[in-house]
Length: 61
Image (cartoon, rainbow, N blue to C red):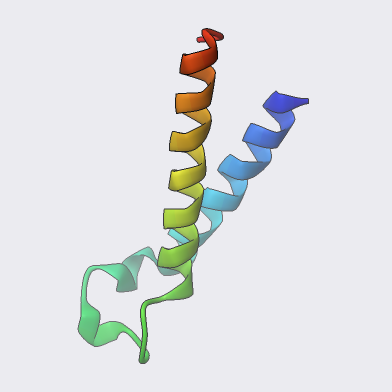
């Protein structure tokens, strides 16, 4: 079950990369505030890091 959730988290994280990566590098391309795709990508990466720390501290890796 945990593998399925990690796979879904990965798919959720990859989706905004394809959607908005071309606008992340230049703030002049942003339409007002920080792109939601960049925020979502950051949240997903944060989730992976927290998950990796949790698995490492439990000793499952």
